[in-house]
Structures are given as structure tokens and as C-alpha cells.
Image 1 (spheres, rainbow, N blue to C red):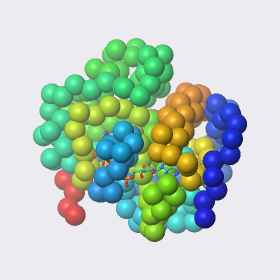
Image 2: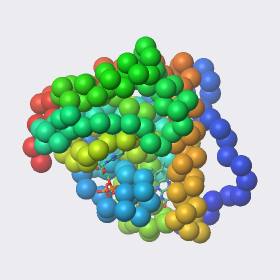
Image 3: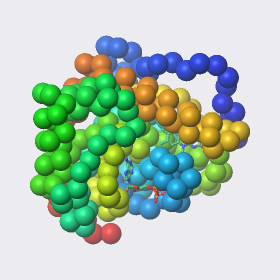
Length: 226
Ligand SMILES: Cc1cc2nc3c(=O)[nH]c(=O)nc-3n(C[C@H](O)[C@H](O)[C@H](O)COP(=O)(O)O)c2cc1C
Ligand SMILES: Nc1ncnc2c1ncn2[C@@H]1O[C@H](COP(=O)(O)OP(=O)(O)O)[C@@H](O)[C@H]1O
């Protein structure tokens, strides 16, 4: 049984300032599949699920359940590329300071240039790298019987991207998964997780991993068979 959330304030960053400590960085990847469809509709926080086999591809089946942060590289599927053509995208989850900071981290240069680059990168098929926060576990609030790997990409997308390929570098552990007294309390804590992830990734020794070529390595470039 998962623990109830302890009372009290949360840490503002996770992991040491001088860089990820073993077992991090952990790398894993997989195709974005359907989950239970609750992330967007019930929580307002979409999570892209990748198959549990993503953990074994990375050799990390034993990873502790909980909330982690890092970078996600998305190589869009052909269908997603079509949807995404010409679509606008903006951060919604973060304040303007954080938006600029994260855009800078991911691509260097000014926030405006980066948003431009991000849009064209997505439209022109190469894929793009985003900050992410993720949950690995049984979602005790929903009492799932199968462990899931779910990534909330810290970026607003106009379209879903099922079938796209996602490569992940996990850089740190934020907290264990908890059972919550209500969905509102879960949502509150996930929002705090997003802030903790943003601040944690903003540190130099963590920001540099956004440039790791692993994040956009994918043979087939998104034309994924099932
Ligand atoms: C950052 C983050 C932290 C989460 N923490 C918890 C948690 O502590 N307990 C829990 O039951 N579920 C947690 N979840 C999982 C949500 O319950 C899950 O995303 C939701 O059930 C949607 O699942 P679905 O995409 O399969 O529909 C977390 C999700 C995210 C993205
Ligand atoms: N910022 C985002 N982070 C993760 N997934 C997103 C995001 N924006 C859109 N999506 C899409 O929404 C889907 C997740 O929605 P969700 O309601 O959690 O359903 P599911 O249970 O099928 O994962 C993802 O697979 C992805 O295609």
C-alpha cells in the first residue's frame, strides 16, 4: 500500500546542484501508447504513456516507483507531423520567467528565437527536446494493478501525439508516489512537481543534458509500426 502524502512544505529543487548522481542519468525510450485517458480529462494534466518495456530496454526494470524529472525528446509519427503542421504552441503550465528560462535551456539564445525554432523544428520532422516530469508506478489514487510509465511534457501541444517515439533522460528523483485524499490534492502536488522539475533542470549541470544526441536518436524517424 502506498503511503499517504506527508504534511508540510516541499523541497524546491531535487538532487545535488553539481549534477545528477548515480543511478542518474537513466536513459529509456518507447512509443507513446494509450493510457486510461484520465490525465487530460480528470486531472487536466496529460501524460504520455510509454510501454513498461521501455524500462527494460533501458535495463531499469528495478527502478523505484515515484516521480522523476529530466528531458524528453519527441520524434513525431507521420500522423502527428500532419496534425502539427502550422500549429501554434505555447507553454501554459509555467510563468513567463520559467518559460523563457526553459526555452533558453533547451536551445540557447533568446526565448523568442527558441520558440520560433521549436515550432519549426516540430513542423519540419526532426523532433524536439522538452523538459519533463514523470511518474513511474501504480497510481495509488486510481489503484492500478499494472505499473505505468507516464511522462508529462512541460509544453503545450495543440494535438495529441500517440504513436510518436519518445526518448527520455531521467536526471533525478522528486518524491515517492502517494495516495491522496482527493484528486485536487494530487493535482496540487503535480503542479509543484512541475515547478521543482523546472528549477532543477535550470541548473547548469542538468541543463546540458538537453543537448544529448540520445534524445532524438530514433531509427525510422517516427514512422513507427505498432
Ligand atoms: C508528475 C506526476 C506525479 C504523479 N504522482 C502521482 C501520485 O503521487 N499518486 C498517484 O496516484 N498518481 C500520480 N500520478 C499519476 C496520475 O494519477 C496519472 O497521471 C493519471 O492517473 C492519468 O493516467 P492515464 O494517463 O493513464 O490516464 C502522477 C502523475 C504525474 C505526471
Ligand atoms: N504536454 C503533454 N504531455 C504529455 N502528453 C501530452 C501533452 N500534450 C498532449 N499530450 C497527448 O495527450 C496524451 C495523454 O493524454 P491522457 O489524457 O493522459 O491520456 P492517456 O491516458 O491515453 O495517456 C499523450 O499520449 C499525448 O498524445
